[in-house]
Image (cartoon, rainbow, N blue to C red; front, side, top):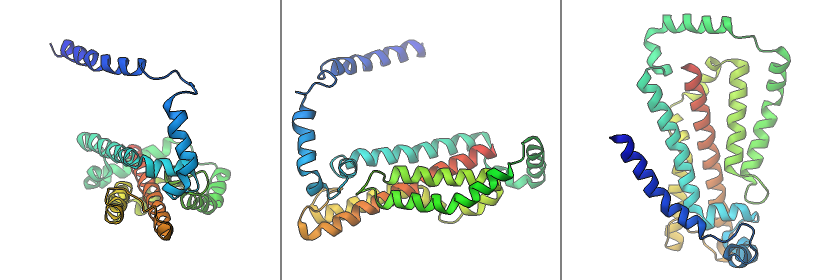
Length: 249
C-alpha cells in the first residue's frame, strides 16, 4: 500500500515541475530575461552593489546570499546525517573507545592488510603541505577579487587534511580534528551566515544586506571575507569529520 501512495505522490509532484520547465525559455535564447535584464544588471552594477570585484562572488554572497546560506546548511545537514547513521550502527570512534583492546587489535589487523605508504608519496605530501595550506588561504581571502572563495578553499583544506591523514595515519590527525572547538568549526559556515546576516540587518534593515554606501565599502568587503572564511572552515571541517568517521567504521 505504501509503494502506490509513494509513486502517486512522486507523480503529483513531478507534474508541476515538468510544466514549469516546459515553460522556460529555450536554452541559450538571447532574448531570455536572464540575458536581457539580470546578467546586464550584474555586469553594469554588480561590483558597485555587491562590493566584490569578482562578479561570481558578488552573485553568490550578495544577490543570492540566502541561496548560498541554504547550500552551507545542506552541507552541515549532510554531516549530521552521516554521524546519525554511524551512531546508529555504533561504528563511530567514540563508540569503540570503551573497548580499547578490541579497537587496537582491529587497527593492527587493518594496518597489516593495508599496503604501506610510499616514502616518496609521504615526503611529497609533507613537503607540499605548508604550500597547499598557503594556497588555500590565498583562494579563501582573495575570492572576492579573483576566482576562488570559501567553497574552493575549504575543499583544498579538506583535501590537505585527508592527504596528511593517509600519510601520517588517522590517529596522528585525531588531536587536530577532535578539539573542544570541533563542533563550532563544523558549524562555522552556518554560523558565519547568521552573524554576517544579523550585522547586515542592523546596517541595512534586511537580513544578509550589505551596505552600498561608498564610505562603508570596507565594511562590505570585510563582511564578504568573513563569509568566505566561515564557509571555508565549515566546509573543511565537515569533509574532514566525515572522512575520519567513515574511515573508522
